[in-house]
Length: 354
Image 1 (tube, rainbow, N blue to C red):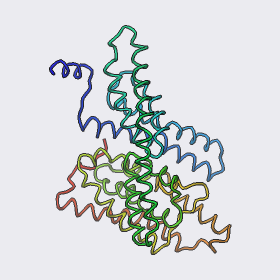
Image 2 (cartoon, rainbow, N blue to C red; image 1 turned 30 degrees about the vertical axis):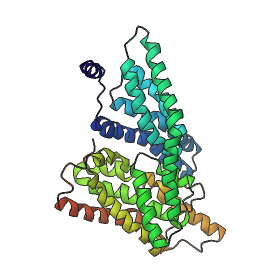
Image 3 (cartoon, rainbow, N blue to C red; image 1 turned 45 degrees about the vertical axis):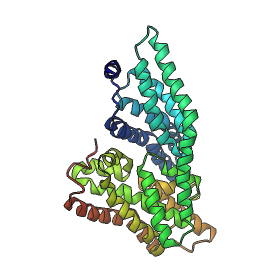
Image 4 (cartoon, one colour; image 1 turned 180 degrees about the vertical axis):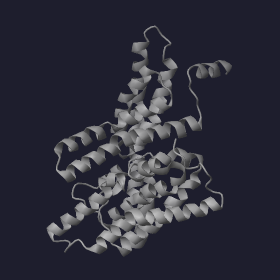
């Protein structure tokens, strides 16, 4: 036992909730932001401005989400260079085979592949062959074995969201908004889930509400800790950046979840907010990330007017979009957060981004 502990210490393999649930998860969120999310922002900008080269750039960035997340995880685990570089292939395999659960598959498999790679690193005279070979083979083999199952679990979560759309608008608004908002913040792809199950119409509008409740909600809720940088990175980036803090104190998620439970039915029952983006259902799961969700709603309006489904885009439409996307998430999440701070469930520093 002592020999095993000594070996793990020598290899800098620290088996702990902090190392895997906070350090690795936090790094993975940054890798996702620097690939899929920023790529989607650039692509959407290119589509709206009619600039094909931006669309291409965004596509290239988005395609590298798996490698980017895996490399970020390896960096957080302090992997040596040969292991770190080998994780690029592992991330590509895990994300590709994981489907809607790609990010979650990358998280689990990249951690295991990185630790195995660290274990064999510099143990032989042909390290330049052995370390990449072991890291890649272990990672890709686990991807083929586990990633499809992880993807199926994420799809089952998506099916739960789809089933919620058959409920009455009020209850559907609550269920879809809460579940998609949770999916957005978890290390799974809410955009992929929404696209796979075609969450459009009122269900898409509820999905947008839930995403905005988490992104704008966390941005405002954590403003005192993270200031303007945190406001931007979460508000138009991703609330997944808060996952390490949620692991430490799950109660910090309550304000955003409660906010989504309020804004969801307001979106479906009061403003009849619909997501009918003609391109795909991806925008339903993007929220305010690069304003992709709002652009998708607007594109749907334009398409509906052109096809005769909608008479015109009204001031009431714009009021609903602004309130659901920005104003209500900011005000409600701040108010809920203030209550939880006062009762001691959220303490100073709980929302600080690393």
